[in-house]
Amino acid sequence: MPIRYKLDVLAALKELGYTQNRIRNEKIMGQATLTQLRHGKLVSWANIETICRLLNCQPGDILELAPGEQKEE
Image 1 (cartoon, rainbow, N blue to C red):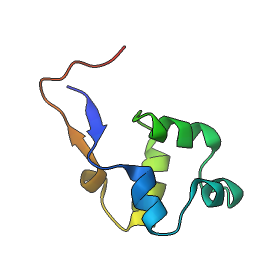
Image 2 (tube, rainbow, N blue to C red):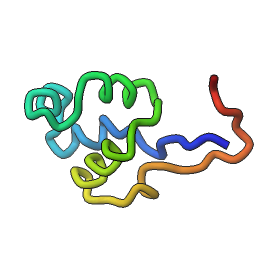
Image 3 (cartoon, rainbow, N blue to C red):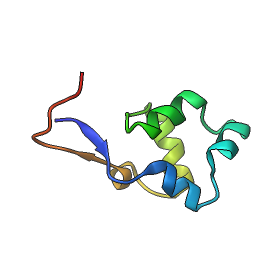
Image 4 (cartoon, rainbow, N blue to C red):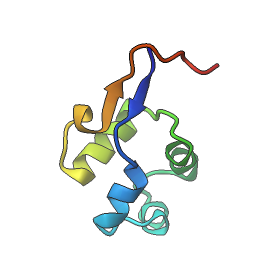
């Protein structure tokens, strides 16, 4: 039962003015993290915390458990 994103995190950040260039330039998150988000892969809890702080939300607002789906290897 994998965990997946409920929303497009990068699009939500962009709506608030956090473009990928701004995120990199201000060292909010690294390029590797942005690449993981772009491909729908999970990031560290520290990055989840940063995303939640920027979006003013809770982890449950952006992540969900997807019962019945197989974990990708």
